[in-house]
Each structure stands twice: as structure tokens, then as C-alpha cells.
Length: 261
Length: 254
Image (cartoon, rainbow over all chains, first blue to last red; front, side, top):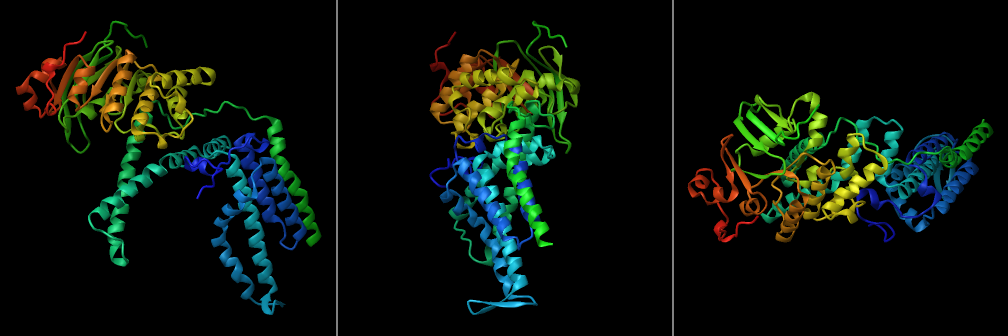
């Protein structure tokens, strides 16, 4: 459920938390580069450098404070990470080599470190992404990708997904109602053929809609690129401000790697 | 690239078209629309109305015959210019509105033509204002009503100040109030218009002249009132007035 602080209008708006902060006002491509660079630096840090991860976490807390995104918005969103952590939880119980006793349970040290590695890096990555999504409208993110020279086809596919995901889920809902109005109930494996056929019909409808949308685009002079409508220019100070994050993280990672050698 | 101000806004000459599967949809269509005219294109389902519309801005290429827009032949080298001058409003606004916000969508056409900055913003504002949707500029289209989305679809082509506005079934799926609001907007626009419709009272209300497309040819061309009152003609082409509607009961305007 979207929290009351988000405007639950649209896929792109649901994750956005409206604020006027320096983080919100940064151009999207700058924030995207800063986040990806930060995550890469985190990933390259050796897992035993516990102090480094504490500093990274403190930096993200700093960004959240600057963007005025409270923990009660960030924490629930971190739940998306849980399925990925399920594997990490199992790791200390399997493997070979040195073992230690934790609360009377025997665990493998190598597995424990591997689990910690996944847990902390995954969490930092997720929080960084949550902060990016909470401070940048989805359509601006797409604009940023376009400016970063991500292939225009990929950006356009994402743009249309953003626009049409509700149109298609509505259509799916209408098909479900039409099935159920005629007495169909999804029960067990015997209803799978019907559901599969509905899926096929939905695909055909969406494909045909795609053709009609394409005609509408051509009618208005589409030539293969979506026009860049944001006239705001990116300043060097924007880059400096955003890159503070990876530039602070980099010496931490380098030090951690040196210390672990 | 000169355009003759005396040239008809739309001139279709001997237009024939067959789909790649061999199904022939148009068998020599002739149609002239003069500047400032509002013409209704009537005809039963499968008559070739949508096929004809797709020829007007070169989305389909004729097997034979020609289309001229303001004296300019529709041919691939001129598609950018032609598509600025022929504003097609498709039937389903969800097909027409593909950008994340209303403003981006209305800006799409002029931006493709190279308009940017303040000029673009004011053109978009003017177009949205003319359909009464300016306050929704920064909303995503999904959460607007069907009637609102259709008005925005209209704005997306008005912003290009087209020579001729082509509307495919403008009144379909609208509730009576939205239908009337759209009619008010269309009347206020003062543009040349070709309106494809099954809604015969709407044709009578908005278009002094009508043509009937049936079996891939134009079979009638005249005053909307006369056509709707010609019972034999109407019956021959599967056109019927709605129950209780009598064009004779409507006073002749102008």
C-alpha cells in the first residue's frame, strides 16, 4: 500500500515522495550515475571491512536526511529485498571449513561472511535505489537514461510500460470479470488452460493496441526518437553535489581493500 | 512546397487500396473538402472509412489515385509536413495519448517538428485551453475520464494548427454531457473538419455536409439534412436514424 505521503496516481508517482530538497532538484541523470557508482564501490568493498559498511550506511542516512525522506517510508519499502535474503540466511549452515558456535548453533565462518556480504551489500543497494526512486519521478529517470545515451529503444519501451501498465491491467481485470460472469472460477490445475488462453488473448489485444499507438505516433511526426522536452540544463555544480556520494565512498573502499590485504 | 490558398483543404482523387491479404477496401474514392467546411463521413461498418482516414496522412499508401492536402500531394518526402497539416484524432484516446503526462503528450507533435522552449509551452497551453483541459496539464492521462482524454486527444492535434482535422468516431463511448461538451468545443474551433461517425444526430448537429462511403466508394454527397431524410439511400447503405430522432423536427440553422 502506498503510504499517505505518496501521491498514488501512477506507477511513476507512487514511489515519489514530494519534497523540495537539494536531492529532489538534482537532474535525474546525475543522480542515476551517482547511485550506480556508489553501489559499484560498495560491491567491491571486502565484506570483512565492517567499519566501511557502517560509513556507507551513515552516508545513505545523510542523503535521506538531506532529501527529508523519513525512515518510516524507507523501511517498509526495504521489504522487497526479503526474498533475495532467504538464500543468504541458509548459507552459514552449509559448507566446509572453520566453524564457530553462535547461541549454541554450529555455523560455518565462510558461509557466515558470505551471508553478511549479500545482506549488507544488498541492503545498501536497495536503500540507495529507494532514495533515487523517492526523489525522482519515473519519467525523469527515463529522461536521465536517455541523456546518458542508453539505447533509445530501451528507454521508449520503459516509457510505454509506464503509460500502459494500467491500461493493460484494466483490460486484464475486465477479462477476469467476463470469465467469472460466466461461472468460471480458477481452481487448481484444470483451470490453467483457460487462464493461459486469457493470457494469449491479452497479448494479442496489447499487440494490436501497440500497432494503433504506433499509427497515432506516426500521425504526429514520430521519427524513432521521443523528443527531449526537459529544457533544464545540467550544471557542473549539480554533478559535483551528486558525485559527493561516490567520491566519499571511494576512499573508504580503497582503504578497506588495502587494510584487508 | 508552395501551398495554394485557393486549393481545397483535402482533395482525394480516384483512391483505391487493397490490403496485402488481397482484401480490397477502397474502389476509387473521390472527395473534396474546401477550407472551413465541416463534413461528416458516414457509412456502415466495413465500408472503408478508417482505411480512407489512414490514407489522408500517408499511413497507408494508395494502390491507385492521389490525396492532396492544401494542394500538396501526400507522398513520402512530404510526410513530416503532411502530418503536421492533417490532424487525425483516433477513436480510442488510450491509443492517442502515449506519453506519461498530458503536457508531454500535447507537446509530442510540435516537438517532433522542432518547436522547443517557451514557444512550445505556450502552444501546448493554448491547445489545452481551447479544449478546457489546461488545469490537467501535469497529470498522467490514465486517471482522467474518457471524455477528458478524448478532449486531450483533440488538443494533441490542435496544437499543430492543422489544415484539416480528421476525427474518427468523436462521440463514441461519451456520456451525453461529454458528447455535448465536445460538440461545443468543435463548434468553437473554426477549423476544416472531416468527421467519421455513426452518430447521425451528431453529424447533423455539427456538419452541414455529409458523404456516404459504402462498399469502398462515395455513394452520396450532399447536405446532411437531405441525406438523412433520403430513406431509400439510407436503407441501401445500412444507415438508420436512432429511435425517435426526426431531422425534420430540428430547425435549419445558419
